[in-house]
Every structure is written in C-alpha cells, then in structure tokens.
Length: 565
Image (cartoon, rainbow, N blue to C red; front, side):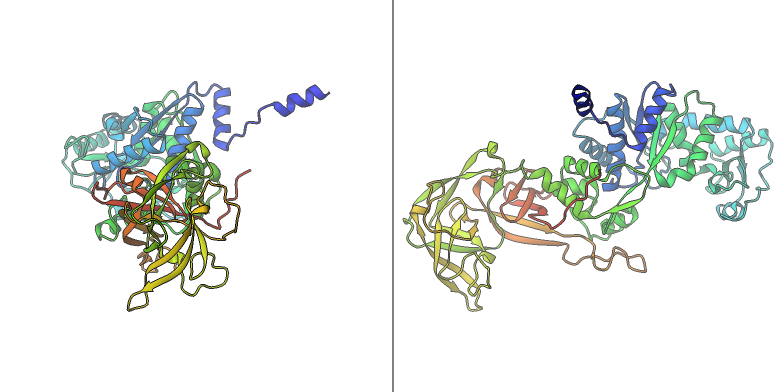
C-alpha cells in the first residue's frame, strides 16, 4: 500500500491551460500531426506589453509541442504601415522570445497573388460579388444587432460581370471607394460579420513590399485565414474580440477548400491599469513631442520597457502569473514592477550612487590617504563575490541621510549621532555648515578605525547605515527618475479623449555621483543602486563622456502578488 502511495506522490502533475487541452484533443484525434503557431502583428506601430502575452503564448505553444513558430506581418493596409515598425517588431519579438533569432518571418503581402486567385475562385462559385454601394450605404444596408440587413442591389450580378469588374478593379480602372468585392453569405445572419463582408477594396497606394503592383488590397478578415492556411498554421490563437469573426474565418477556409484548415481559438487580452497602449494615442504623444519617441521609457511599448531596463525574463514571469483564460481582467502596473525586482535582485551588482550629494569630511582620517575596501557585490548572492571600492577622508552622502533636527525614529546622521558608513567605518557627526539660505553644504565627522567592516567589532551598536562615494574618485552621472506618464488619480483619459498627463513623469537629476566602477558600464547594463532602486545605462543617450542612468524601478513596494493556483 505504501509503495502505491509513493508512486502517486511522485507522479508529475501536469497543468494545462484551456488552449493546451484543445491542442491535446486535436492531436489525439489526428486532426493535426504537427503544431504550428504564429504571431501576426500589423506593422502600424510598436508592440506593447499586451502583445507580449500573445507572442509568448504562441511561441511557447510551438516550443512545448516541438512545433513551428512564425512571425508574420499582416501588411494588408499600406496606408498606416512603415518599415520602421517592421524592424522594431522583429527586434521586440526576438528579445521577448529570449534573444533567439526568428527565422520564419513572412508577410501577408507574400500571398497577395494567392489571395487574388482565392477571390476569383469565390466569384466563380457564386460566393462573391462586386458592389458599387458607398461605404456609408453598405453600413446602412448592413442592419443592426436587432434588425437584419438587406441585400445590395448589385448582389445578383452574374458571375461573368463580377469577374470582369474585379479584373478591372485590379487593373486600376476605378477610383478608391467606388467599388468593393463582398463575400455573398447571409444579410439576415444574427452575426453582423457574416452579412456579406467586404473582402477587397480599391486603394491606389504603393505598398512597402509590393510597390505599385497592386491597387486593390484584401481586408484583414479575408486575408488572415488564407495566410494561416497557406503557411500550414494548425492553431490560430487570437484575442477575444475575434471570437465573433470566427464564423467568417471558418467560412473562408471552408469555401476555398483547404485540405487541413487551421483552427481559431480565442483567449482574453491582458489589460494593464493606468497605462497607454493605443497606437493612435502613442503616435500623437510622439508627434507632439511629449515623449521621446516610441521607446520613451515612460511608455509600455516593448522597446520602451527594454530601454528602461526591464528584462524579457521579468515579462515572462508576469505572463506566467497572469495565466491564460477566457475571462477578461486587468492587472496593476505594480505587478510588473514586482516581477522586475524579483528577476534582478540576485543577478545584479549592488553599487553605491549618491543622487543628491552633500560633502562629508572625516576630520581625523589621515590626510591624503586612500584605502580600498572589500564590498560585497550582492549581499543576498555571495557567489557574486566582492569588489574594491576606494575610501578616503572626503566623501559624499545623500542629502536626506543628514538632518539638523531629525524627527523621532530617524536613525541616520544628525549632530551628535553615530552611523555606519556601508562596508566601512562608524562616523559621528561633530558639526555642519550651511549657506546663506540655510542649506547644508558640508558635514564634519570623526571616525573610529576599530569599527572597520570585516574586523568583527563587537562594541557599541549603531542603528543607521548609509551609503557613500569617495570624493576623489566619484564619477558624475545624470539620472532619469521615471514615474507613470498618466496621472493615476484622474484616470487615463479626459472626457474629450485627451490624456491626463502626469507633469512629474520624468525628473532629471544632474551631477549625481557614482562609484568609479560604474564608469565602465555600457548601454543597457543594469545595477542596483543601494537603497535607491534598480537602474540601467540608457541606450539612446549613452556617451562615454557622460553616464546617463534610467531608473527601472524603485527599491521597494508594498505590492504583494496574488499567484494563480
């Protein structure tokens, strides 16, 4: 009996989300032999945090089932698309997938010839017709959620006439908006998407990939299932807003007779509170110069998060915590901050940086002497070892680590009080000096050489420990302190649709001082600044002559994650 219990206890428990359960069924039933997924962004802007969920889900499913993952650009609308966005999306997808090069890169425009032939096939089957109604008239004819639509007066054109008109559309004989090709399905369908949807429109616009070859372009709902079918996608994983479009997706692949049609499955989007993800809003912020491009660290585009210092591992951790479901939900931005702290805390060196410096002079320290102290790189991870940090009788400390008249339970430096300088000595404040405005300009202390860290001093205790940098070797740096771009108390948008901007979303601190080891840091390198938070070297404003750090996240938060069971 005990052996049976042990066997049960040791058996691996495998948890599957609802999409994986459906894939398992399809494999067991022989619907598909191989799993192939795709991430299909439209190249009309930069990817944001919400897209990361779809990327990681599709990429992860392909990996889990030893399948194939495609990155495919749905470039069917040349009006808004740009090669800048294509290159940015490639970088983002490779980064979020773990720096692995994505080889399977495709474009919807690769299949324009096949899409055109598919449209011709539908016309010949009597399943599509050319319509002369204007866009406004088509909307009027479509009906409402409670009233059926009515047939277009052009719905019963002959196959021959439709073929002729469609060829002439392709040949550029008609102006934009004058004619469209519509699928002939059912104008009384309870699903409005099935009421003879437009599948091709005239648009005399050059395309980034095909140039001037085409002046007609397929609509997304027609193009997407064809792209999936041509590539051999087994499961087309998309967000819930496409659930009502699934009947049309299935209609297209069925009417075109694909032998192994792809299957569409929907999941819930991830909404993040008090952030801006809408491309048109971000574009306006960029165009108006309110933010420093699509990668401004206050945004939640993947490029912005990467520039700010977030890691792909932290975003993966967030997605694991959120999980995959059909229930719409929102998460707090603090959840992402929790993930980056958890990811970095055992990986990054803990360095000393003074953001608002005031000079501290140790009056009894030997003049002109400098020593090098052993400082742990990460107190929580001894395997990271130690480094040598210069120390002398003239230092800089944080201005708020000294107060002339401290409140109760203030354990840092004040007149007559003794504190430990981190990894160094006890110092006692003997006097201080101020300018004409009463601002402290210099603090004078004495030190006790017997209290050097590592010597095992067991005498008196001190309650406060403060960090410092050596005045002779400190390196100057600019530090950018980022907060939410949105005024969280007022919400994201005003009644007129404008954004409630936080006027303090970016504060720049000049002439901060950091320990000399940081002078070797390069773009994107990240560290913990002791008692301050996590920071990285900015990749855009980096200069060998001037260090620029972005605050990734502050040191601590009261946020406690609620993990999925």
